[in-house]
Length: 176
Ligand code: S3P
Image 1 (cartoon, rainbow, N blue to C red):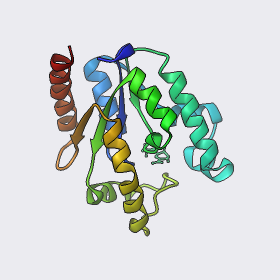
Image 2: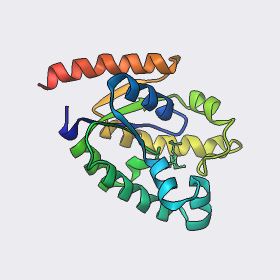
Image 3: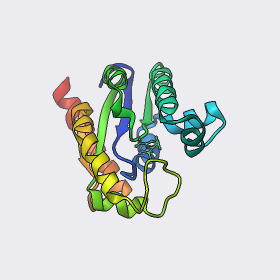
Image 4: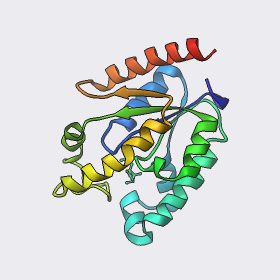
């Protein structure tokens, strides 16, 4: 396990990071932290309002600041916003302080989960081509950042969690 026993969950919007993080934090007895929730609390605004009123660049700066702050604490499950991998400085912080788990999902599964939500400024249900482009541009970043990759295809939240627990046991045995 890396410094501070933190686990960061990464993956595209709709991959199920929030549900899996919650269950995993209960099962592993770790504190649950969400970068998006921290940003919303700091700003007193929803993520959509921050994008609308202050712009994406401002949000990304907040995201990096929050990640850095969160990573000072030990023993957490960190539910990361889907775009966290787009800034190299975030990757360095995560690599140093967290075991990084990538929830890998197929585009069709992501769309099925996202289409009923209206609270994601970078997702537009009418522009699935845009979503696919964004996913393709990020996939190499997620894969590169991950210590462990788990596919979410055809799995319920508790099944993803069980697979993570199994993979963690194997990882700990092989990484000393
Ligand atoms: C974003 C994903 C969102 C949130 C923001 C930007 C992204 O988090 O951080 O809307 O760039 O993919 P979720 O992945 O939890 O939806």
